[in-house]
Amino acid sequence: MPALPTLFLDAVRHNCDVSDARHAGSYSLCVYLMHMREYFRWERQLGPDVVLGAGAVGEWVHRRESYWATLEDASYRPLPLPGQQVDAFDVDAVNTWLVPLGYGYSAGVGRFGKPIFSVGCLSASESGEGYRLLCTDTEKVREMIAPPAMTRGDTIWIRRESLRRALWEMIEEWQWKKPRNALSRALDSYGFTEDAKNAMEQMVEAFSETAILHELGERVCGEQLGSDWEDMLSATEDRATEALMRTVRDNLADCLMVLPALLAEKDQASLHFYFATMTGLRRQLFPALVEAYEEFLIRSSASRLKQVVREGARHWLEGASHLLEAYRRGVAGSDFTLSSEMAERLKF
Image (cartoon, rainbow, N blue to C red; front, side, top):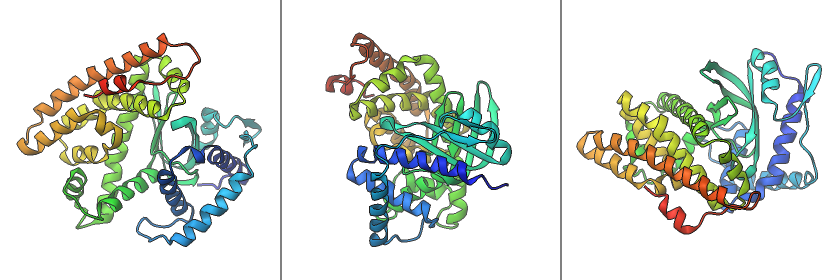
């Protein structure tokens, strides 16, 4: 695999830093520090089991924040390709050059409007009906935020290194008290106690497949909901509202693609792992699914779980449609905020 030009990597790195400088203050202190610790670990190429010293991390964060302060007025740079320069978001042009070299480039806009860029070593590339899938592993350039999966246009990116790190953080947190829950069942199913390294790789594979299914489900959601959905996301400056809207679409995507596939395969390990990753708002808004999973554990029958998934697909599509109706009734271009009553009605 040939080395990439320094000018190209420096331009991507600059854009990552500008994005971080503009958006680092968008997160709560707890979430910010969690991301920075993980970013420090990645930058220093430290294994997931290496204990981080608070002093070293704190000093690194201070230096990084001081550097970000110099970028307040900086702009995103175009990317230098052989014979041309292209916009930082022109992923098709960049990957036309990069993929044959064994690398993949991703660029998009994540939560709260934060641009996200990364360059990684390509581990898989395939094309399906109406989409292109790029999987990367070791990452050469990234930023503070490293979402394991993302879709932009017809391209789906799966970032296996980010998946691996996110998985280990889950396991590390679980190991403090080792509760008997979905994650412990998944770890048992993959033989984590006997061979942690092999189990991790199996779980990364399962995580990758689930992430691909979810992103395919997101594409189906996009076809059903139309372009107004993205306009609605852009129209809100209220973070709680944005999080709710994204959760509605996440649950719809999972009911359309992820859960039917897992239930059809009758792969209990992957099913346990799905519920281990079902946290936060996804879990709060979808208690019926959690209850059906608990019933599945007791009765060893997935009939109720399958029923809730079918009902959930209808519920979340209706919920998303109601959100769009509320948005369309509003004034175009104004900030869109959900009422507490509407948020409560979203639950299933």
